[in-house]
Image (cartoon, rainbow, N blue to C red; front, side, top):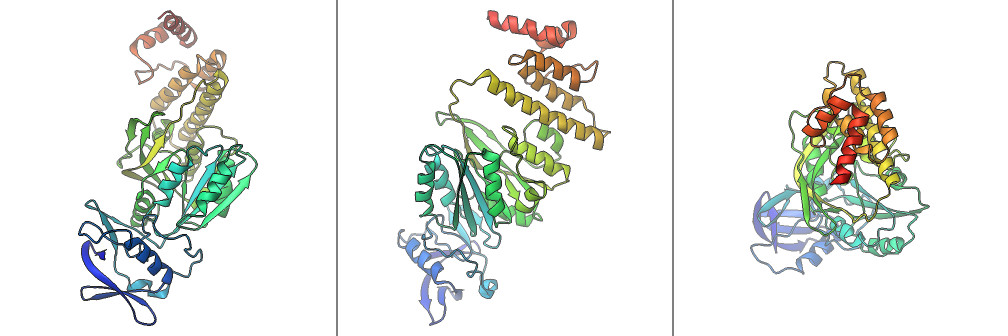
Length: 414
């Protein structure tokens, strides 16, 4: 069989000296102290033909991309004093090198409510993760379909330790907190049941976390697909001189599954706000930023977001969603005003204005009240993706309320 060590591919053989299994390649010998690792390696190598394009990983340093057997131990005994003997080992495939760190446990928290139709895709991506130390905590949040049965059947074949929690329906935030309460990982990968991770996602973000001083939050990139499975857009989180508060206002800090969250930091701000029905991760990130959490941006696109067909959406639901957007944005503005008085508030007010404008068709009276309460007198909006030149002319001439009424009438006649 073949093994990749320090970026080079070697033909190797497995022997046993009566105490340890020995993986021999060239003039080197690699001790493997755990029989579980040998069994997983043998099962994996038996499924592939030995060709120069295929590389077998040493399972002490890397998980075999979902091929490790279901009998893997759940204790910590595989981390032995012999670990320092192991050289850097990498998996090579399709010309791409990716390292994996077994030293840091990552907990995956998966809340599920009536998600049976999407779980196969989600779990396939999770079970294929290449990070070396994972646990999965699945929370069945009072589902009325067969979500619980699907989860229990799938978890019996998981390649890493799992925990199953059943609870009465309490919402996604409460389910995430239930997983957070029992998670043992240094970082947490919060998942949404209808989304999908590419195999290297967790390993990659764990590696860059260790390389960059273990930040409180890694903001990841994503590719979004519409309900028909067609690519809709790609959000790439590029590092640089970014205004984190403006990114937060504009919802430009990734999302629940794209990000990797330091568990201790999330706990320190009280976890997820169970009263939030939308903008949940942005409320959590707002509280993280308030306590000066460190942020790292990851421009590797390793998460797939799958939008679902919403059908008819009630006016009341849209009303509530935009009210929560606005409430969070007013809190951000208040915080920036009190802690960063030198910052120009106009760009923040523009984002808030666009949100209030969007609310107006669903709740005109509330929109007018919020405009008068939160935007300064004499506020003059500018061009934006939501506000064009025609509307600006109406606003300057008629004011907010009449401008929106006229715009509504003009739209209805089209």
